[in-house]
Image (cartoon, rainbow, N blue to C red):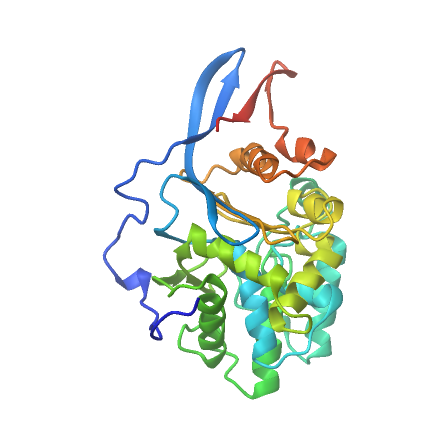
Length: 336
């Protein structure tokens, strides 16, 4: 479904604050259970689409706009392709990544910068440490400091700079919502979601962030796996599924799921957003209202079970133990 008229991005940073999820009080999606006592709850909204794209389950407010955060990255990568950059394989997967900052991630970012004649100083994502906790400890122990290349969005920013350099577009303003590249990405998001972008804000990495509904986000992921071979959307989906370790990292749920459930497309986002599509067109998207990423795994595992995914990786993703005195005394569990 295409929007009936082109929408113009509005700037959330300049507008009065609004609550996208009000007035609906989202249901509890996960409980924090310690020693048999429920000590906390995480509310959120979740939608599940059937193979035909119809809504099969809706919990909470699934048609109001949310910021998908990094779950938008496949659409941003497709925008880079539509704008003219010829990426494939690991490089395209990295363009759609929230990478863990492992050595192979950092090495490929630097290699891509060099291939396109780009100075790392051109990256406008903020300096950061590796996203992965284990890698962060190793990185700091080596004496390394926060760096733009290490930041989890550096692959996306490198791809954006590369296509701007190729097209002769300004490099210094590549993150401006009115930049030619960002206008292309805006159209890709609307095409994939089948709805107008509700508002444009600024993501944690500094890039424009397009708000769509959870239904639109699930629809977008579904459209990527169902896209024609050779299309920008399908190329992104195929690269992510073929090289999931470049999309996330060695110890991340997106990697595990895409590696162990053939044909699945998975991407999490900050503030506890998750979207997944299966090769037959079934899809899901959800957001934990308080942004607690500790609830992501249990909620994702339960949603995958409702979609009929029966694989050992589902239990691995859903396991979220609570410790007391160094031993397991409880868990975070889905409650729907």
